[in-house]
Picture 1 (tube, rainbow, N blue to C red):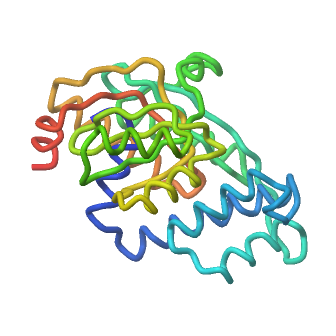
Picture 2: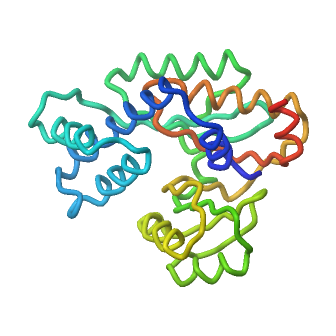
Length: 248
């Protein structure tokens, strides 16, 4: 089980409570606002906004909610001004973390991020200490198929690689084409569990201790529960057997 996107997929499959869904919608709305403010409100000419809109629709956010967020970003409706910041650090066991936030109060958010690191056994790092390990990629998780058939369909759709990831297959592609690859795989009859533009680590940290695994997932969940945190990226590698033990 490699990295945080797989953990997010597992949590998604378990089902989200209404409160968690509301928090997700609030975070996506903030992303829509910032993308519209920085690049304009037309997804056709604003690639960042187009990606945010596709993410919102993938989360089943209504068209009205999407439109309202875009209008706040373009100034048609009153909206707050958000600042994008990336914090870097380590979870227990030396696992690298990148935490992307959108905040209207840098001091408040910085204090909250430092508190989570300190309280849950992690440590903050200087800018660049962790980020060099990550690059942005498109990742599509596919289940219920064999590797050869997924490989053929994915490569035909413009993907770069397909690799087994637990009981799924991890399809990687250019981040600008992730939703086109997703649609092509769905059109070919495959079950797509998730599709996202995400940060992928070049190096992974294998986690073999149950207590370390629990601590890593706990600190990631704490960051994700923060309203200002948009995404958390990590480089842990936890076996399916150990994950089952942690979940138990």
